[in-house]
Amino acid sequence: MTRDEALALLPEYALEVLSPAERADVDGWLSDPVVKAELGEIQRTLSDVAVALPPAAPSPDVRARLMASAAGPDRYSALMPEIARYCDIAVEAVRSLLARVDDPSRWAPGPMPGITIQHFDHGPASMGADTGFVRYPPNFAFPQHRHLGREITLILDGTLSDHDGRVYGPGDVIAYDDGTDHHFQAGPDGLTTVICFSGFELI
Image (cartoon, rainbow, N blue to C red; front, side, top):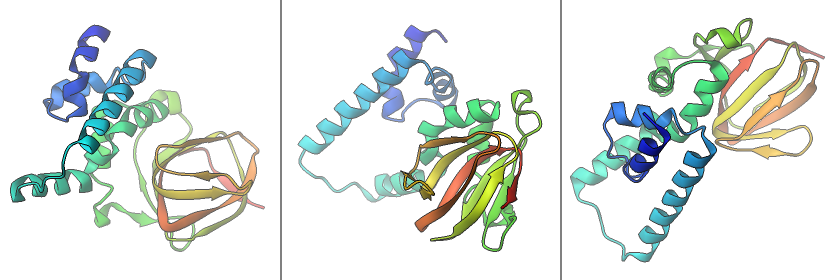
């Protein structure tokens, strides 16, 4: 798919009426600044139109589909290209992985009580790192620690309050360099992240 073809499909992409194959093709262009800016403009226009229209209750079938979409992996569709890039895997593979986020049987105990994890394989560009989803309970305070290698953290759900007072939410990406030390706290609704890291030590 060319950039022009991706641009032509953006209205349907924003309305989520594309086929899975077409959506995957457009996903591959979302890191392009021109495509990303155009999608943002379309989404803002659709939002303005929605606000201007008189409210209407959806039919039971439409409501059921909307609720299923909001609870499924497609709620993370805007983040899929970034996850794919940081973990060096295909966007469709990311979609499959995100489908497991809501499956309790996929989560395993993490490095500290209360933390749960889902490991997944990454591509060669992330060689030597560990990749996966990490979930923290509400208000979990992660103690002071030092990173043993570069770490990329992408917020899926909830908030992270870092030691310097900055607060990160869904879609935010935080990069910690090798040797960085800090502590952080999960927000009142908990925290779910994607991480690509090389280990840490408590200090």
